[in-house]
Amino acid sequence: MTRASYDVVAASYAQLIPDAHDGRPLDAAIMRAFAELANGPIADLGCGTGRITQHLHELGKDVFGVDLSDGMLDQAKKLYPHLDFFQGDITKLDLADDSLGGAVVWYSTVHMPAEEVPWQEFHRVLEPGGYLLHAFKLGNRKNHMTHAYGHDVDLDVYWHDIDETVSNATEAGFNEVARLQRQKGVDEGGPQAFLLMSKRNPAPGQTS
Ligand SMILES: C[S@@+](CC[C@H](N)C(=O)[O-])C[C@H]1O[C@@H](n2cnc3c(N)ncnc32)[C@H](O)[C@@H]1O
Image (cartoon, rainbow, N blue to C red; front, side, top):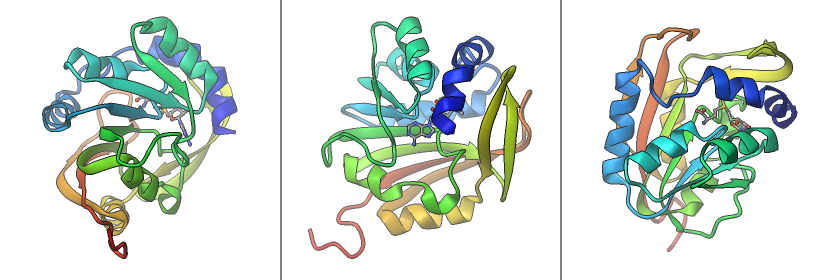
């Protein structure tokens, strides 16, 4: 249902949310810090229409996007033809172990309950010491959306607790580098959270 809903809203999403961080300087600041820290290939996981992929490209990074929705990817490819976008599922990535210097997960886990966020998979594809930047809606609740971006949709939306998120990421083998919480901005329903983490290696319980 997530994939089909994003296929339907893709063109409107691209039109309504064209910019990476318009009017949101704190979001831009943590992304700039991530871009300064992360080397090597960066994957924008759940890239949607590619606005964050393009922003990281403008910051000088070697970046590509992955998304479930062909409709969102069609928009990304049309808007940013100089960048690479691939269809894929962030819960089972078609990427080699330790192959990324960085990963951005920017509001692409908002349709998953906290216990289904694939921290092990993010850990697997990052190189030791690689960085992950995660943006999500801050809170502890779930909603079902039947209308979004001017279209009928069928989407569960989850707000995640920041301590639980850090705990799940830590258990999967990440170290917290920094966290940012901010109050709601224009057109947002509530506060937002941003976590910068780095991959510890080996993960707890592993021998190498
Ligand atoms: C709220 S949009 C955010 C898109 C983009 N990161 C941005 O900030 O504009 C959520 C995106 O996550 C994608 N998504 C959701 N679940 C996914 C999954 N399991 N694998 C890949 N992409 C997924 C959706 O298709 C959608 O494009």
